[in-house]
Image (cartoon, rainbow, N blue to C red; front, side, top):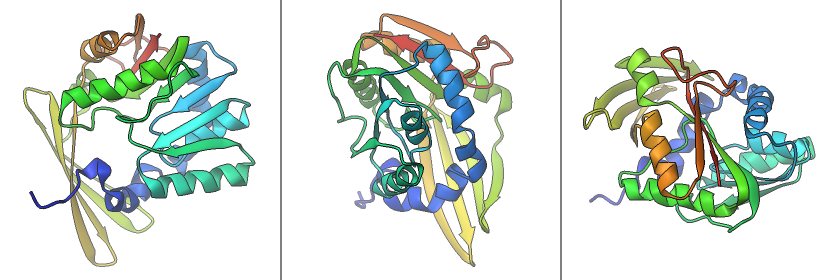
Length: 248
């Protein structure tokens, strides 16, 4: 072991890829996405847990709409950006620097959101269960969880071994490989900026609609509904995302 933290615990990784993960056009989609999320959840007020919250694009918008919001993320620099965004918007948000495997606030929230493929980072599936159980236990009775991620089914339709993007003069090159019988994604991310090259290994678990639904039922959720995008379309061959709405 060389002592290097896993990619999802490495602040240097998150800082380096922020322009690619959260470009302006992604941030600007937050209001429309939340219209869909709130519609699926059937909620128009109350307490919301956004975990992980990243740079706060959804948390700040929720607070601006009058929700009582707690945003949780393990990446301290992202929380600083989120706090700045909240201050600029005049939004009151509680931000907590914590790992989703550790954060739990029993029977507190009416809604929890986990968006933008922010689940399945951990090598041990038991850690995914732990994070999901923390969300379940943090919800009030009748509270709902809305998750959105790329599923096995969607990935199988659109998978590409290589790709690249550019943001603020930085180029991101990606090599992708699906392993372990379509249970795991291995990515090599190469960032090129100002003549300097940095390389990161990014890996995560892949879930099918059935597998994610079963995991959520295992940790206690009583009802789980599956959709093909945040707009509530069917989860079929035309699905763009795996969206799950689960009720405590």
